[in-house]
Image (cartoon, rainbow, N blue to C red; front, side, top):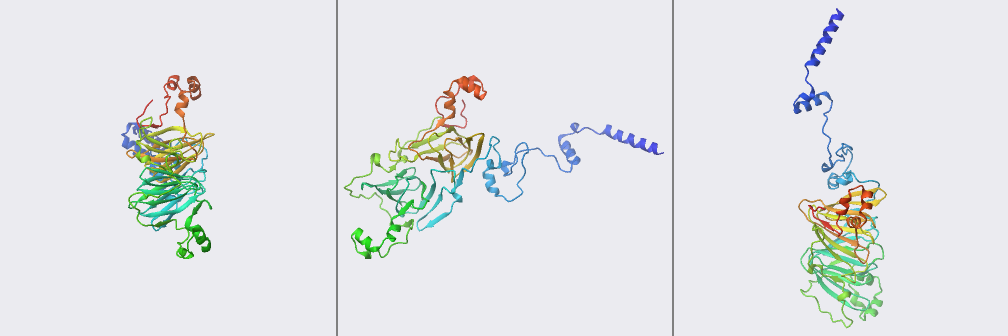
Length: 434
């Protein structure tokens, strides 16, 4: 009896197996359902999740973030999640956002700084954003380092006096630049309705780097002040609180004041201002945007800071290159960008940038900058602690090296090497090709 029951069970199972269709013979929807029924969890197609702020690549490597995280920052920085597969090794943070800086508010404006301690990888340059209302004054002062600035909003009047008693008063517009050498006395006043904003560059946060006039006078005996200026001590009864930094002033005149000076003017090669706003900026090689270089070659007084103001069209690429003479400090003014920094020794890291970010690319490190926006022009400023802007183009270098050496090194066809452009293609348009 037992044998007949077992035989019946065996034949029933065999019958069922033969009648059951294979998975491949089912419609796709039923195939997926079948797989779902066979497993406790469905087998989903592996796909990357960086756009959703999750560290999962196309191979399925990684896992969702289960612990505490700032999801908005993760979405803004997919390359921090591992999106770029060519990244390797340990690269320090090379990025700081002004939005992470403490903002200081004053009657007439505000300032926020990125200091060296915020971005330790930047050894040469730190930056600040400063905004003024109409008539507001950045008080009279001088620095132990040079001050470089770019006006990106509004209009300001700058004035300065050097050690020879030569002076300059100049009204600046959006796009203009000033440079006050180390130790030169100066001040800035906004001339139109708010907002008036500019980028400042220089390491001003270190104690003993910035010297404010009212701060000094407030800490000097009145009897000495009276003798020094040849006035009565009572003149100094209402001194302001030391170090006001920014304060409201009287509304400036519509025209530059004519100050008679027997010592002469700071003009020509001695001028502390550069009117980039008055220049025609032509497309850069590669037709992907524009680069306006302002350094000691066209702004002679600027001997310790060299600058480039760059615009890059959507999808454009600042070609792969490096700078042989200095590290590069950057301020991203508009748009979104991506850059990979190569430090040698199989070490590289990719960063994502947006407006308000600052960054530093270490001395001689290889890098590129890509505009990742589909419809917005990328605008950034490059600064170098140098008298000139200099870069070495990777493509140009390879194009001007014996072709067989390049082909053997990179394992690429000889005809590809011979087709490389021998002229720098600084800003490559989105659809640019060899």
